[in-house]
Length: 500
Image 1 (cartoon, rainbow, N blue to C red):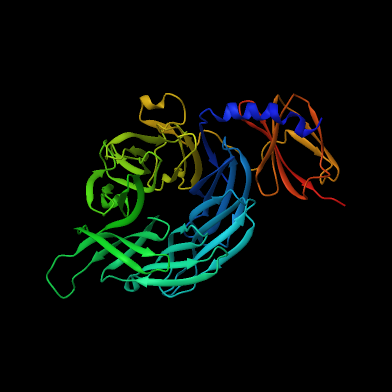
Image 2 (tube, rainbow, N blue to C red):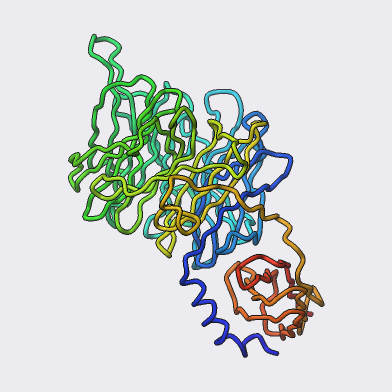
């Protein structure tokens, strides 16, 4: 039986099931003996990719790239970079099945404690190139954005307050540095997080700062602002907003489009211990403040490191909320007028186990079916961490009907990096042809090419055997997955095609 002979039948089936909303709630252990914190997530046409931080602050083991299918089943994992790195951003390029990853390395004692980096990998997580930046005061990479020509601008700050800057680094599409520039405005303690393209020639840079008057009796104040630059780093406009000085607040400067040329601008506090309030600020196209709303109708102090917006201009955020004398992971959706549409708490899969302070939604992204994919971690009573991945619908639910309550449960399933071996492949490596035999069924076979892109899909009956000619396949390593009709992973194998 040829793989191509049943493609038309199988593509109808896949189109039917992919139109339905997919829910899942899974927890992961990349290394069973190490704490794991899910940190960043991105969508792909045929699945999801997320990164984790493995280890602890006292014993960091570096980051891991995890690739799953649309149902959250493992496809591949890869440990990235040396110990001590932090992954602060992740994007996927479907045109060449590559990832761009950015963050900073911990270097050691001294003023220049960290080095920012930008990394490009293929679908398998293999490094294609990496650029590390060693400039004084350019230490912490908070964000990066791709420009229309494929180049990148990185937003960086400093790990030493006396060198406070709004730092920007531009690289070309191959990672070669084009320029780096530092901007100062007479403030202290800059943090540069927000990057948003205004048009094809202008970039908006969001920042926060503190203004301290050393030689006068004037009161200090916090400020957050938007700096417009062209793609050569020239400042075109700088607008900032002074606010009452909280002393221990941190205004991040996240920028999110709300539609109709409006922006959402947000702050956050350093931690829940500082009794902070998370505010969302809406600005018009001239950066005039339209409204300022608190990110919860329930009340309680919030810490929200995860923020995004969808096509309708709704702001979606997640993090931790202090409510009813307890801490809960918290996710909400706010409409373009600042009204809370829904908000949910998360609970652990272990009955009566409380969440601790280190648990939160860390990253949230909209998905093509109108829902959301979220990654984070929960902290166990022994102070270890467990990564989880949630596929939510448009109402913030991971199962039908949760909109009638406040809670969703994270980490209810435990996929393993080594999935059950429900299929046999021989010969492997293959040259002219390969035999694939499944041991459970009925189900579906999925193929990914050496770049990670999906190939043909075919239904298989129980105890079925498939003969596939491979003499015209490009050499390389393929992934073969066998899923039940409900989407459960029954088997996964690497298949190597090598000619001659």
